[in-house]
Image 1 (cartoon, one colour):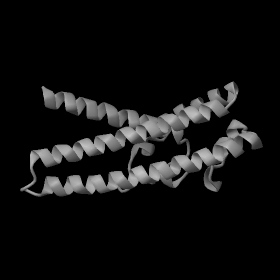
Image 2: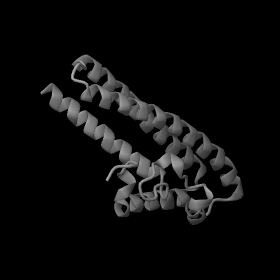
Image 3: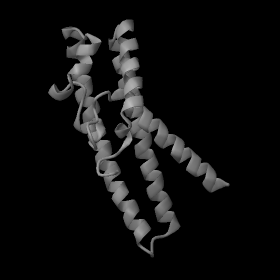
Image 4: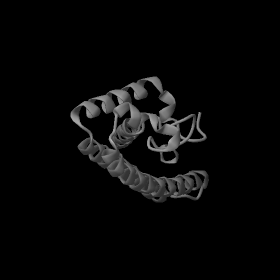
Length: 159
């Protein structure tokens, strides 16, 4: 029963994270690249802020927020990569104890929670900057991208 609850919580957590990443990243994913590598404010993905009609004043505020957001995600992604490797090593090693595996899982869940909180904070920061009509357009675009781009949920290197 306890394992079923843990599995359910982990699945829900991962699902929420995927949804929030999609919400913050219309156009961030291209193929199998993770969100931190491409931002909607880079030259490649500037169509989002054009579609939203951001003013120069809004862009001046959004750009530093996006840079800080991506730096945070880069660090968290690096931490998660290290933890995934540790987990795989523990799972592969026949001498690995359940306690070590559980500690690694908890560490991964903590990083996942930090990623979710970072994304949520970024969305809330963006929402404060956008006018009501821009907010509506922003969330409409993100909802549409979640429905039409399922590859946004695929991590780099995974099918």
